[in-house]
Image 1 (cartoon, rainbow over the protein chains, first blue to last red):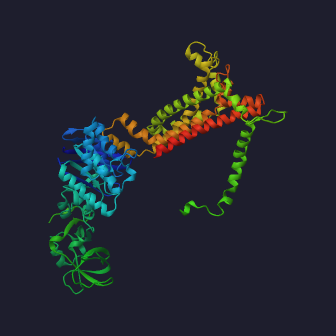
Image 2 (image 1 turned 60 degrees about the vertical axis):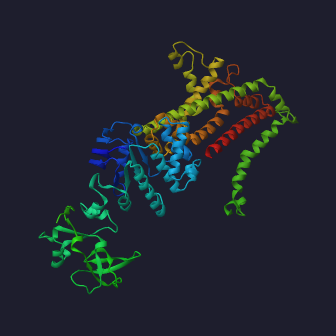
Image 3 (image 1 turned 120 degrees about the vertical axis):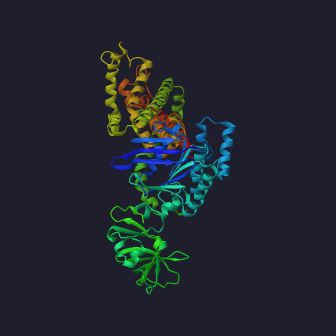
Length: 348
Length: 284
């Protein structure tokens, strides 16, 4: 177990910038999630740390030691690949035993370790099976087990849940969190799924174009997104972004623009914070209902607000149907303000 | 299962292919087997001798010599081709930017017709003028020495056929998922362990296929040896196919020659069956 650091890392593949002067510090035992859209190079950061891909520039540290020039075999990290990368010609036992054999373990000690790990992950009955005879969830467990079995200094996971169906994804997600709570191994976890990131992480770094848009605890990321990119990326449904000029003076006062030119400000309102009421309500934004999305306990509503598509929660008891006029209300404290030009958050 | 049941008109649809196969494969094969059971030479009456030729085969020292040469040739050349081919494939897989050029360069020996390359090697082996003798420093009669001659033929076959094996194995190597090799590295496996425990087992089916092709080719080797040595000196390089050719087309003894050909077919068949068993085992 160890702290992990990326210091001023640069990496590019041809024209694609994966990392540009990127610095990250991950505390010992922390569950750290790298969150970003598909194809932004999150996985490459794991590959850099694992040593299976060289960085163009910069230093990586594991437990304070510069490992930039250390081969992957000696970095003492374990990795779960998106494809699981189980060895197809070896049975579950040998897959789990592989990292141990490479460290010279054999015989009874090896068997004991493998059986202990298989027991923890509920794989005891599958030790003699080949990967292709396993279900998706079982394969994922084997991949987890193979990574955990030698107690690595750091644990790297590359979208480990993306090949599983929805129900299994939740189950394995809990499993991963449980494993982390038990072993407290420093974990770097890559995903494009913000919900997964929120559920698992101690801290999340949102990546965009080779740099970090924001690095914070999940709650802080949600409560105070640093820019419109993070604001749209974190939280479902995504935050509504509206030109502040849409607001009539009373709402503008409510939003505490505080003398800023409304044309230079973008408003951010989470659908959860925006309530769609019947047309009669006063002092609110007027919009036209486009469609309704029942979500079980309540209903999402998509509306057209002066040409901008917004999503809101239908107020309890409101009777709204597509084509109706609605009034959207929000609490003053729920408004996020962003600079219209740069997208940066404006503090109030 | 419905997919298993043939459509009523399936036989009609397959008939053209079956007819062609029967005409060019089944009929001649059957005829050779029939010939081998008869005393048959040009301008002479046919005479059924049953298994007589096969009994003669069992006591024919020249047959056993040719069989020994053939098996030795096949075993040594295929082993060398697989080993060298694997080494070249592993190098080519890392060739990066020069890959296209390397592919082309490696394939040249395979692209040259066998007779042409046999002639080239004949000159290389030439005792007075050959480059090999020049490099050895003293004139060596490579093709005149009974022991050296067979190995000279093997060397040429290895030179010629290794590219085929290399290319096949390279295709196999590219089928090994990159994540497996990365996982092995992260799991602490060094280059040798990764090769032995991951790459090689993953490659086994392709290696087996290459071995099948090369073995069956090597068992019926004719032109490479015939052009290079003509089977000499003193039958030291005479393979089964050369012996069969001589009996059939020089001595015009069709009956006994056919028996030799059937023996060759049987040996190639046994080799193919053995590999097929291995392959099935490997797939399982």
